[in-house]
Length: 192
Image 1 (cartoon, rainbow, N blue to C red):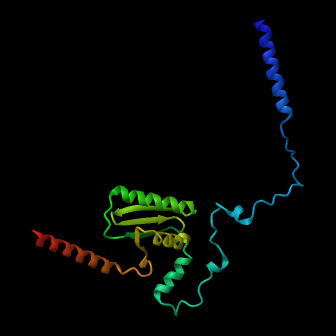
Image 2: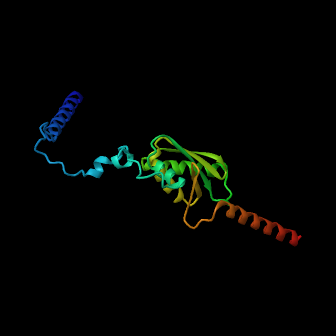
Image 3: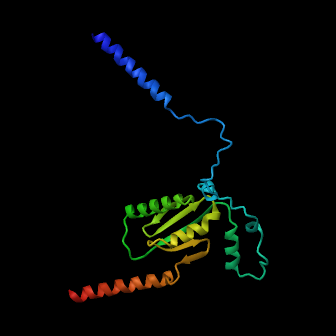
């Protein structure tokens, strides 16, 4: 009796497996007549590295002789393709710990990598980062990204310093913080 049930059980399993195999959808190898129009050009280019070798980028500007040095450096940075580095000064007057600095560096690195820009941030102190990148042609994108972050105050690339429009120079910010600190200390002394 047991043996009969066991044989019937295995027979049922084989029968179910063969029926499932018969119902399986097969895709032919010849797909020449199939039109695949779901992917557009942006989809095909997504995730690929930027070439940066557009012909007009490689041409020199019309005349270096009539340009001021900052404009010349700006033109050269547009054509820069090798490794680059720069510095980020964080907003002053905000107390941060080492963990806060690490979290900012990790967050910025991940956000830029999501945009296919490979940048490494390293803490210099509690108010500054140094960043390095292999592809210098992405430096403009990195600069714009950093200046869009609330924690960033200024970016320094070479001898050029960039801030958001309307932000005062660093010297003015430091002087303001010193004045506030003196005012705070003077008011504490008067209370005693």
